[in-house]
View (cartoon, rainbow, N blue to C red):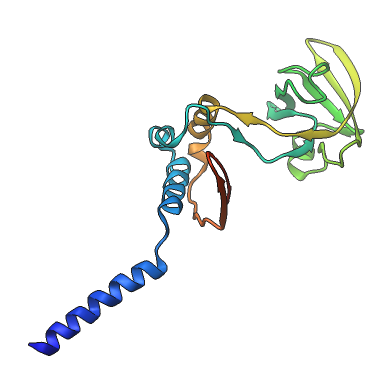
Length: 186
């Protein structure tokens, strides 16, 4: 009987000790639960974790502040940031015909031959069409851009991209937290 009690106490101690040694703290668990809800498309759960004043700062990048997509073989502008250098020159649904002398074909876009890449300050020459037969040429400098999202657009993006996230494996590498602000590296 004494050996059974000793063995039982040892096993309980070992389980408690290993749990303490290898467990995540409460904040890490909450972060992982939030990320899991985000990437599994559970927008109700995501909204539960967000503060009413939530702002998501996306990764900064160098670019023109535009988004494009290929539609029926042509490269169209899908959105223009109000803070990017293209805001006064390009509009949604403009058709980009050429970038730095390279034709904006589906093949050039997919192969990476046509791109808007470069360092801050580099110029990009764009030939585009607005309306019918109204051709324009512009030269724009690449700038630093960083999009910020509130709750509504953040949740909308989760819904839009949920169908594209087939499998994911989350690992919280590091985080920094001070008062109500947090930076995650995952």
